[in-house]
Image 1 (tube, rainbow, N blue to C red):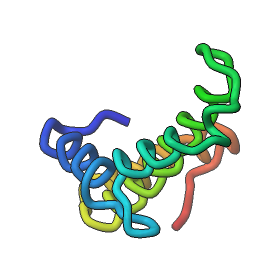
Image 2 (spheres, one colour):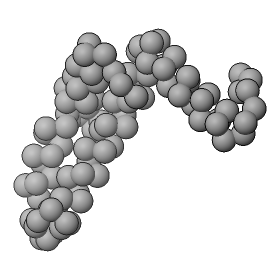
Image 3 (spheres, rainbow, N blue to C red):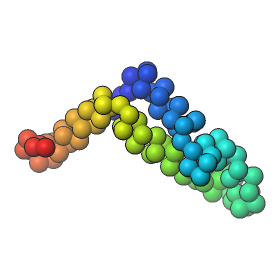
Length: 98
């Protein structure tokens, strides 16, 4: 789904600054994880354990940011509902009744 520039900016703001699970934003969470001996023991490289650990954290923040943006922005909610409706109708061949 394509976001407007304003919606994309807000998504980035939520993900990078506003979300603070366990009291830390994304940057602080990553910095603290990278500083741990457990992280340092993981394999380096694009297919290694370090990359996977970072990707997992970023994914968690991204999912939470999506949920927050959906809660904040009625236009985004409408777009998502429209996409889900189209998918259901394409799969079933029947109109989606809410």
